[in-house]
Amino acid sequence: MKLFGTDGIRGKANVYPMVGDLAYKLGKALVYALGNNTKNKKKKIIIGKDTRLSCYMLESALTSGVVSMGADAYLVGPMPTPAIAFLVRSMRADAGIVISASHNPFDDNGIKIFSSKGLKLDDEIESRIENIIFSGKLDNKGELGKNLGRAYRIRDTLGRYIVFAKDTLPYTMNLEGLRIVLDCANGATYKVAPMIFEELGAEVIAINDEPNGININEKCGSTYPSAIIEASKLYRADVGIAFDGDGDRVFMVDERYNLIDGDIILSILAKDMKKKGILKNNTVVGTVMTNYGLEKVLASQGVKLERVDVGDKNIVKRMIEGGFNLGGEQSGHIVLSDLNTTGDGIITALAVLSIVKQKRKSLSNLYGDYKKVPEKTVNVSVKEKPPLEDIKEIQNAIVEAKKLIDNKGRVVVRYSGTEPFLRITVESDDFSKIDKCIGSIEKAAKKVLS
Image (cartoon, rainbow, N blue to C red; front, side, top):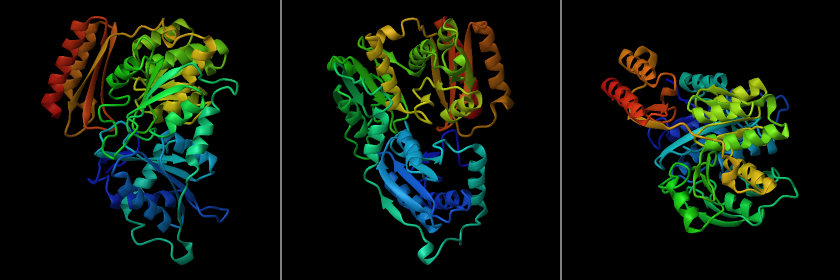
């Protein structure tokens, strides 16, 4: 049985695998999988979370598992996922755990793990942890007496991340003169994001910054962009910024109240980095979901787009392999590896705003040459996820759809890595063909999978 998906372990809170017993075993297995510490010092594990009610339950269970194996747990409370990636490195920890289901509804939860380098665990280590858990080899094992670990609640980590994020801007730059609306999604950025942008001199209006344990991502944040668009209009903002529940995604809104997704953000950053000569190997890493419009605009700038499977872990892996320093997803996961080791919504927004300030242009003027190819995505609920290549009805529908758009668009059919959905995406300049293609694939999928 496989626990880890494209972004850690995820599921309905208090339903297996998102239960205290599994979290306890995971904490133990992680410490064990890290191996012996040659310096004879206790391992240090940082544990952060978002604002979901169920985080208390999982935090306690993970902490129990970690300390039972003789490691120390450092609890930092609600913090953005990318802040944990930074803190692992800053505090010289052995690993970092984030309790979050990212953009999912509040009654879901998840567990992501970062290595000592601030990177998501690779497949080999995840498999090792799964094998340790399912083998039961640690069920009756643990440290005793003075060899048990301790749990510490750390209070200064918010300030550390604020300084880190602000330092990604040139020291002489500030955000004075900008009115910014921040949609914090009632999630992990609710406290730290307004502080960062205010300290940099912007006029900040924060919305959805009062989490109560159950309102995370509820009609707000980057997964509900109409909220940030309407708020930007209401407050006549220069820029709107919307994060998801754990702060690793970001959407923006320009002064004309147009939504700027991850593909547009990548086009802005790539163009600027190419001009400055800092875009490594003149390449951007995207995914199979990256709009063809981005590929075309990058090509016009002499920049290559490489595609990988969906998931920021896959993007980061390819960036490391190829020596690249910019990658991301349409969903707003943007990785600037010169600044952080994972997608970071706050730092991405700051990078875009630094271009606004440097060029003394409005945000809408930075992406004028980007033209999105029309696309549509439909989700089909599935009971199971058998290999798509083995399902003849779906494959036949995909082949016919590709013939219909005649290589003037794209057809992408894939399972969600975090939810029970089959996602069907079609890109084409002909809207009637988009609907026809999606309809035929959706019909075949519902017949077989629903």
